[in-house]
Image (cartoon, rainbow, N blue to C red):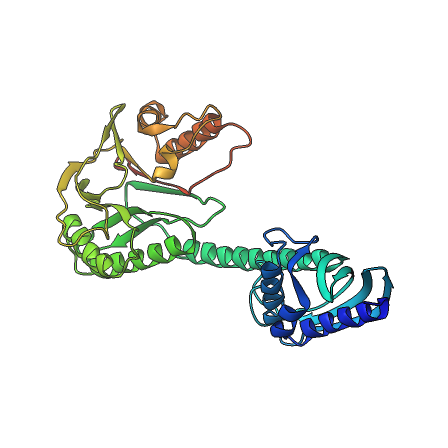
Length: 387
């Protein structure tokens, strides 16, 4: 074939691509065709080339190839192309449709043997354009995700109590330090009709927006059930029945529920798999233990109730597992045993205990610590009666 015939064959080849005419391409491309210029994940064979053309064309509703210039020598034809189109139809090179209009320029070299396209080499701006499109897409998705996290964090923090219960001869000090990613920690104070106050602390398994939504739902259910003045065990059992029906699979909620009688200091409590609080009395720390499964795992659960009486000078540290599961640079976990020691060695007072725990937490983790989970503390202290 003459060089002019070779150029005409290549023009037919490019036109068939432009018109999405795979039948014509199958006729033009040699059985042993080799593509020497491929993107990662693409094949070099005739079949792989046809598949890539079909994918490229299916990704755009208006792809157009145009030959700007052609040269031929011996059995090779050099073509300078412009390709225009919108990525608006299907996934292409791992990028979902964006609707972005793209324009590529490129040079292809085709070798013609026996009236068939036998080989192809290509260079162009398409790799850069596609990479840029992918990066732009990832940036937009990351920005959208970050915006969703910011909204979820605002919702989560808005649900935390704005005011503390005003109890004579009692001091309550909450502390909430959220991690960068949204978690599921929550605490609440529930005023009850008999003058008692419910003290709640909980944690939803997992992180992210799903955990924040489950946290909000759990908090709402707790508040609604508490209106019936249920005991701590009954309250957790009723909340569990609601969450079992609605909580996503593989998620659960740990929750400690205490009901405090401010007059007598009597604290009745139940625990749904949460880290047990520590009560400090006369310089000794005791864990407030009660058995019970986390909420949302199984129906018809019963929750053990225990009672203790807080005397003047006693305090209780409620905390989430974000405290005991922090690690120091040597990858040692803080653990409940260290927290117990912190409760016993602090100077008297709820504010001092909270400050002491936070200070020791910073000392344990060291500089450059990357917080992995929310850390929530609620310190409750019975003061000496004022005359």
